[in-house]
Amino acid sequence: MPQVTRRDFLKISAAGTGAAGLTVLGFDVAHAAQIRQSFRIAGAREAHSVCPYCAVGCALVAYTKEKTDGTVELLQIEGNPDSPVNEGRLCPKGATAMQLATSARRVESPLYRASGSDRWQKISWDDMMDKLAQRVKAARDATFVAKDASDNTVNRTEGIAFAGGAAFSSEEGYFATKLMRGLGLVHLEQQARV
Image (cartoon, rainbow, N blue to C red; front, side, top):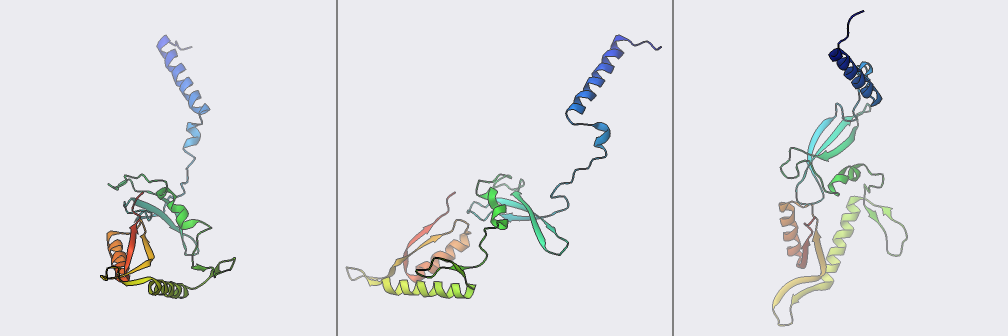
């Protein structure tokens, strides 16, 4: 029988205790080589985008995968860690970007509720744009002020207000302001706060 020194005994004990501890924690070394974890975004295509909620410009990474029927499925949206703006972090609104795209409650076409009706009905985009144009024209015509009390020419409409979206780029904000000023609006607001 070979002689076991005190040092050898301690080495064997430490190795056995370590192996037993790893097995108790779920690390089965022999079985670990056989198990391969499949990640949901493994093999997915990365698409880089910008968060739609405010004008800060936080970068997003969207992971998509083509299904067998040829359609593209959105798997995950997360903050882009390479972005100098958000460094991978997202605010609570940005963190819900996935729900914006995949929610079962998402409205995908214009809905219109007639006066006195208790339900919404789907209408086409052309019909909705016609209704909006008619309402803007009617409100502008009804509230247009050509001259103020001091007989100064003002050419403004006081019956319409405009609130710009926080996701506007600078160019979209500039365009919207020019359009609204062209209609004679004086009540303009830009919601560019988080």
